[in-house]
Picture 1 (cartoon, helix red, strand yellow):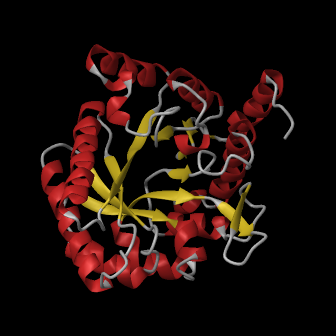
Picture 2 (cartoon, helix red, strand yellow):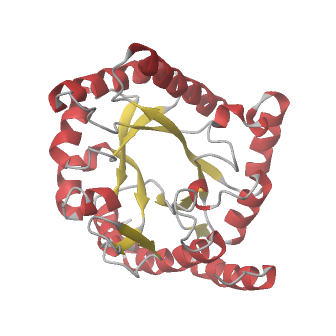
Length: 305
């Protein structure tokens, strides 16, 4: 892959800033730090501001996935980090925990719930509205209905911990839970003022085999945040290759239209999985491209937002 120079980056960024402005307001777009695993805190914020993003979604910074262990969010540094965000008029859309609620072995489950609670506490201190968690897997030898009940119990425990904090725990469509019936069972069972849904629209389309309209019809009232990304079939059956937004077969434009028409008021967040897939485009390419494409999509649906 060709090296992206600073001049090339800023040139693309300048164009994206223009494309990503909507009147006097920034577009409601964000990017996950999964897409820029080499960037430090200051670089993340600087690039987000340069490219016209309104928010960043924190899913690890550099080599540390547990945000509660990052120096930027400890002690007096936390107040400075809040000032860093305010200086650039940026928000943190959510904190991405690795919490997996399917775990049933007591020690593993306790560790997962402890992480979720630590992230909720950090989100409260950072004034971040959401913490993402996973339903994840149906463990071998375990029944899916029992796993769903376990996930519900985990959501309710974390939702209870979040009470009074200003934080909502959002469950992502992920792993073995990408179809609306299973997700709806969890969301209904765990429904509280402090719980909600993160719609990974790629997963419900590719793995769940659902149209955007069908997913939103069933789950739309729970949606608090969304992940968008594009892909096409890979070299082997079942494999997917992530591509720049609009270059694949995932109907991202239609997903945006469905959200806008449904009255969604959250961020349209790019989950560019560079950390897990180092072969895909660099953030210096993917992030300005997303800002430009989303500027076009949201301009088309401006009347619906």
